[in-house]
View 1: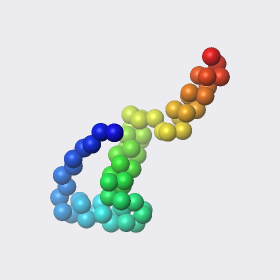
View 2: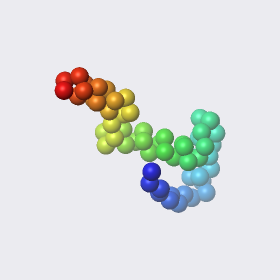
View 3: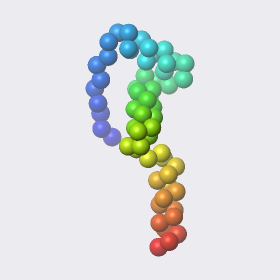
View 4: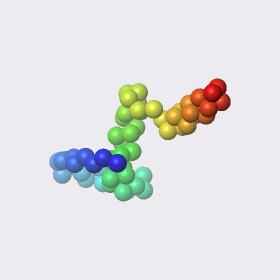
Length: 62
């Protein structure tokens, strides 16, 4: 797994902290959730279920 360091203004961090509390996630987990959601929305990352489904179909047709 790769790491990324993100610098946030105090106001941004406070908002992120509040969101993570409201969704019962740690701040790092919340950041990962936000990034993955945005990547999926932009169709740059395939949803988890789709890859498994694709592998099952490939195995079925092999």
